[in-house]
Length: 379
Image (cartoon, rainbow, N blue to C red; front, side, top):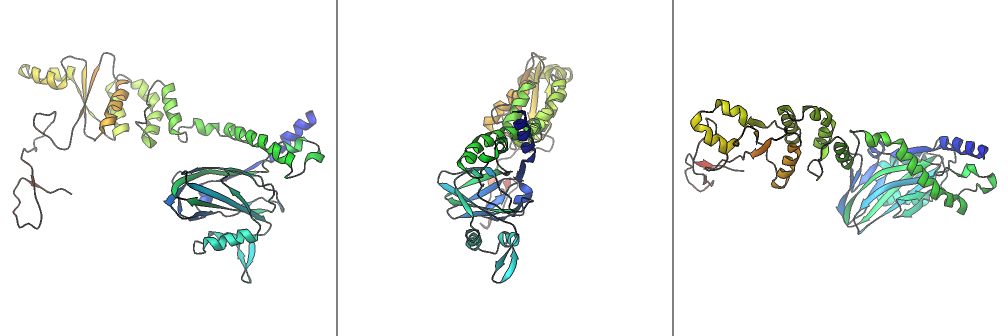
């Protein structure tokens, strides 16, 4: 038993992963697809066929036995895909009497996809239909070429493509008589080996899960909850959410202060809201203006008003209020005022010294009419 365990340990060290990420995809030939900033392949909505032709993966050794290809294919219900792959020991082939590099040929956008598929057929490529996790034990050769063909009406996404070599972890733990490649026993063990590899990959990449620069949005919401801030509801996404979570520790130190509200609005809205505290305004207001100030800014010393110039969708204003409410002082009464671009009489608005009241009229060009001072041209 100890000897077998040592054999498994030695074999695990031999496992190699070929990640097919942005650097490889950027050099591939894409038809009906595009590479996104996240290193994923966006499949265009179309009824036709879309193709991905990758450059070769180098297995280092002659007659290398290839292992497991996995990836995530997020496609519409009416779509299907085919993975084709072949392996050779050389990187060239005879094309019309001339030696041509296979990589150059497959990556050439001018060459018709059907012509490229003919090379796959001539090389005896294996095909896998609608399989996101395939075993390529039957392919032998130092270099491996892969093609993905997507068919059907709709759009989708391909991401996290990876080749694991040799694809299983357990065969060397058994006596040599059982180590027949591509046998039923080999493929049966590969099921458990694949599960093991996936668990091991998650363990190896756990630092990326906990890294605020690479974690998913759902995890960022969880991290914020760990630090005492509730930001659920898909109110924030992308860089705003990531920036907020990174600064939560600092914001918690400032909680209950003017500085925390200023920084929060700056992160979320891209502007620092104008903060008016009723307690301070009371010192500057004349006695005859107390009633107006009470109506605008609240009637007691714990009222705080935030004037926000940026537009916020109606359905997100309550979520913004809920988030800000978590950072205001105890007993504080928070008011949010959204200043629209157009001001109207009898509404909560502020006009500076250059403001002007007029009745807005619609003006038309090429009607031989003179525009008066009240006309407004709109795009």
